[in-house]
Image 1: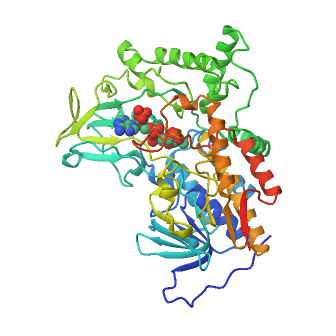
Image 2: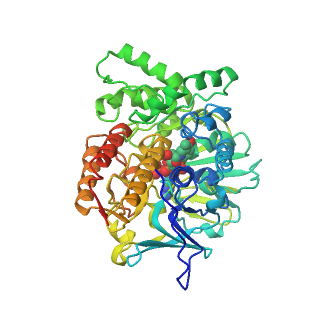
Length: 547
Ligand code: N01
């Protein structure tokens, strides 16, 4: 169903640069999908505001050496166009950042998306105008837009986090962040490089740059669980096989709890004997990559079951790291496997067998200060030419709370979410009419393949907008009680898992002072999709749709 384009209101003295049905913030995977769907399939006018100088979102900014997706590329892409599927070939199981960005460019060009995108336009303010029922949006570069609807497609991992360390500004060497890596060449050859952080980004950078640099110091606070990516270059016959099964594979992703193309089992890790379990883990170790977490059904719900997987991974780390002291430092023991976002790697642990790599345990001796030449811990000094922050993000809420978003009665989103994000279905928040969030807190978002989440949200929002406009319902808002109930559901669902046993970014533990609430919906994509479908079938239960 399509809706007629609304004429631009030119009566206002300070007419915005763009007056459209929908303002979308962010031109990453989510924003581009939203633009294409609303404009090309539903006939709405859309303006996308993007902070970067090009499209791509996280894949535009995260240009660090070794960056690639850690979900199979076949599953980490759009599924809306069979023509796109036909003409695009992934060269490797896990595409590199440049290849993913080429894909994004290809999509933007093929569907002529760029003409509705303002680049270099970081949204600083969005204000709901109660009188006219519009969102007025302003960017740091002066660009303004007005839309009946506002869609925040800003990503869960886009507000970078750079811990403050005394004296950092005095450092004479180069300071880099994985998520804000320079577009031009960075010369690490024969340099003394320090890297802080061993999450998914650090784990990709470390083995990539270790062979180049004179010496690499890895500053680790918490050891991580990582399983081998089992990366491979795809051959023509691999691609032909993938293509032949693509429709079934896509259907499986859509109906799976995780959005991953790894079969889901109902079996408990405790239902089988040691030998069978060991063989099963070996099989997953050899192929599953991220899907190792799905080897048994209860790895994220039963600590005893989880321990079997954690022990298996620890035994593999022991095989991969030669020095016993370094091995112990790299071995996670303080939280369950999967409770922090697990990593997949290619040669991460083996990198610490190199003579030019030193692991520094900053949980024992924390970072103290930076001087002109060095990074100091409480007990030692490390002279560096380059310091890399692989310290991640203000996850899930960072990008939503950095701009000033004012809803009904001038209330800010920061104020409304001061004790943690409050959403209905993760899609809307009460008091902020006509504002939608794609794959954000309260939805499965980071707990599955985010591409599957994005496409589900895009379809849900597009259906809702078109139906509401056709019915003459200009204002849609989450009911405050429905929101409270949903937040409770999100909490209750997480309480039945092991996620609560780690200081993770799912819980807001990555930023000192951030409210400690579990943010993503842990009930799985499949259950969440059903929930959204039922809400729609019930006339959008939980949403006030006001004529
Ligand atoms: O960030 P992280 P990331 N002092 O938050 C450490 C996605 N991703 O950029 O655990 C010292 O995971 C921190 O230590 P600790 C993926 O979803 C995807 O690596 O807090 N250290 C940790 O070691 C991933 O989960 C791909 O104790 C500090 C690290 O920095 C997400 O992005 C690739 C510190 C941060 O790890 C984020 O990954 C890469 C401090 N003050 C990333 N603050 C794909 O392939 C933080 N650390 C798709």
